[in-house]
Length: 278
Length: 309
Image (cartoon, rainbow over all chains, first blue to last red; front, side, top):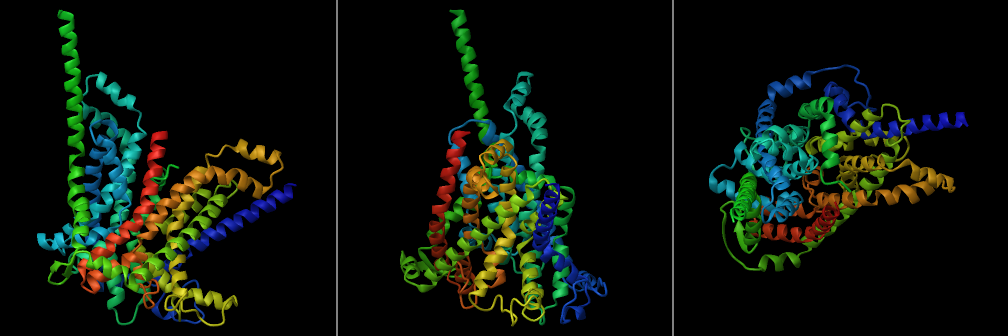
């Protein structure tokens, strides 16, 4: 009986970890490819571990391609989108949860509706708008475009988080003579902070990874973010240098790796709250 | 008399307070509404308006054509082909996501798995990685000469010749479906796992006492408990998979010969490849109409859930 249980546990572990490793194998392969010398890629049969480790591709990437420019653009873009969306979203979500006025419920439903809206439906008028306003091909145009998906998302997530804060806390502060805004700043904001961090991380990742708007709205290297920039490196190069592209992929995932290493609990919490409370 | 007027005064005070509160509430939501109107509501209405014109993208000059775009697209094979592909892609990838997601969630729900938190966060990674990164890595894995995938399968004796994963049908559609499933199934895993952890163990104990085996327990206890979360997950993922652009566009570009072209790709191609902006808007509107079916199901379900809560 005991022996059977031990064998069962061992088999379960082998199966589970085999599946998990298979799932992240593409990402392991990405890292391994990025540190192999170019010649080693074209060996048949291919070797799993690099025979020789090189960081040459990273040097080429940083020194001989516009990668750093793209990285800077992406950082500015993702940080400004996050800052705007989280500020507007926090005020809005607080209003949706704690105040009553006509049309509030319909508004919440509208937020949910836009949260599901496809980008391609909005992209043509947005493109026309940016061209007419003369801000096409700028990071600003992307920040504006990104609010179309980031704001509904943030509002939705923050609303769900704030619904979890007990109303008594605010009521107690009001009895003690605080104003509504005072109570918001002193009581609600600290309580909502984990939710705000979660939302900020999700928004940042969404903006960092966005591709379609960047493809349509920006065509100059000065404003191009990483997603379209790196793809451009793939298309314009004469023969595809996979090790270079894998190095670019690793570098591009750096913020994500940092978030995963240090702030993962906020991501998991966001999952539990956002839209999937069955 | 005095007490009545005093009470009236108090009530009036309450009233003005309530009014002031709702004014403050509206003030707080105002920035969000402003942004909504400017970048979502206006473009949405504008798309419908534009779909009634014929517009040349480079010059943005156009003229009114009424419903002609719609008549054209509904009678073109391009549209029906894209709609069919869109449905195959959505159904295919959703099916793999749900089956694989539930299976892995069941595995990860087991307390005996060592380093369980680590396994969970590793599984989450594909979901958050940029689609661009995912596509680059998979295109390298799929590479017909030096790709590790063909090499593995040759060595295991599964295939005799390297497979052309993205360049021919039905391989291209299968590849796109599988990469989509790989990227998005962690969403199912996390949602299902969270629910699994709240199922009371007593239910399993009772089922075991009634003589249910592992399969019996799964079908009689687990699956009914998962119904709610699976409904929501499936509806959400249907909407999101249906509108997927990046993954398909970057993997196959809709090829070979439009065999993996879906409606979002068609909208992009019409607007910025063929320079037919009005036509593209019409495609977008029709796509929106198809999606509205799933979206309203989700909204309906959400409203019911909100009223119950």
